[in-house]
Structure formats: structure tokens, C-alpha cells
Image (cartoon, rainbow, N blue to C red):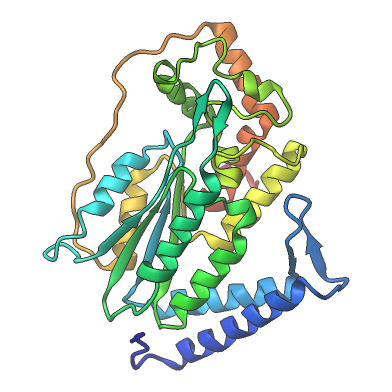
Length: 330
């Protein structure tokens, strides 16, 4: 049975607002209005009134500080995510947190005939597991952990799922706490090269896909992984400004903890929200072999990720969520 508990009137208001928001979202696909904001990336239409309603409900839940919920970690490769994921797993024993842990992901692979694509199948399994195992019947003081990784969730086209999960969890008097970690875009790109050998690639071939409008490569930049996961990069052949705008929309609407490289702050906020006791976070999946790039290769990589939108994206993330350049009035 779902737990509602004896909570404040704020939570009753939260339930009403999310029911209203869900109803309005259902209407948005069938009705036209001058207040609708159109996204060229996937055609989703979210009215400004709906956004305000959702934001108000979310703020009410945060203020009421629920003691139960679901912590979702959207894990972008080569951002230190293995370290965080292992740390989160420490809270499954009863003496540390007694949380349940859920994940499902599946890597694609390339054959002589082309890519063996698993993103639709994998995403459906992940979503089904969330709907059937993670979200229902949350209990008082219970936190459940969900780890989304390769092909678990394609955020650009699955925004409705995020709305639905939040509504369902908060209707139980609990909280959905979506989290993500990024890193410096050039460091991220150089770090990913560690996988080149096992993917039978060379340094010269590693970034070729970034020179094409929509090609799919052996790896994804942070901006492309956040939007499309391991699907084709920029499948709609959009300018970088549109991609960055869409990514920032998704972060602001749905993510509760966004950090760039700062694992200590990530840990601090998670402990504050969940009430878990401190457990040391130890570095995992550290690559000890030195990668050597020429000055020209680094310059070419930097140019490619800048043209892709990653440099602007991470700057926007730092300004929005970490106060980057705020001392200069930016």
C-alpha cells in the first residue's frame, strides 16, 4: 500500500498541483495556445502556466523535506560516475541505510554490418523496472536508489516519464531527487579515449564523428549523452544553441542536484536530503595509463567540442547551478 502519512497541508497542496499539472500536460498535446513554448528538438509543448505549476509544487515538496523518496543518478560515462555509483551502493545494507538499488543498462556495439542498437529495448526495461519496482508503495523513511546509465533513459524524448515519476512519488508524500555530475568538457573528451583500444579505434579516428552533422561515433560528448544517450548525435541536425537550450530546460525542470566535478558537494547534499550516515567515497575506475596528445590534436578536439556546444553547455551549467562568474555580475 502506498504511504501517505500524517504530513502538513503543504503535501496536500502538492498532490493537487501535480494532478492539475498532469491534466494540463495531457491537454497540451491536443490544444493550441499562444502561450505554448515549442521545442524544435522533439516537438514537446509545455505551457508557461504548466511550468509555473510544476515549479510551485516542486518547491513545496522541497520545503516540506520528505523523509522518503527515490534518488535517481543519471550516470554520464567518464565523469567519475563509477565512484558515485559505488558509494550509493554502500547504503543498501540495513546498518547504513537499508535502501534498495535498481539499475539496467546495455551498451551498443558495432559489427561489420553496422551498429547493433539496443537503446529502445534497454530503455523500456529500465522504465518498466522503475514503474514496477522502484516507485510503488514507498514506506516511511525509505529511500530507493536508481542508477541510469548507457541506454537506460533518453531524456530528450522521455520527458513525460520524468513528470510521471515525480507526480507518482510525491503523491505518496515522498520525494524524487534526480542527480547528475558533469566535468570539464576537454578533460571528459580526453578521458574517454581510454576506451579506444578495446573498441578497435585509433586516435585519428576517435573524434571523426564530431565533424559530421549527425554521425554516431564510439563515444558521446556530455551534451549529446545527456540529450540522446548513445543514440545518434544531433539526430535533428540542430545548431548548438538549440541543443544547449534544450539541455538546460531539462536540467532546470527535472534535476535537483547538478554538479561539475565536485563529488564532495554531491555527497554532502545527498546526505542532507536522505538523512543517511556518512560513508567515505572512494575513487573507482581510475585510469592510470597516460594518454599522449599533440598540441594540434588537443586544439582540434577543443574546436570540435566547442562547435558541438559542450563548452557553452558546461559554462551554462556552472553559471546556473554553481554561481560561476557571479562575482563579475554574470
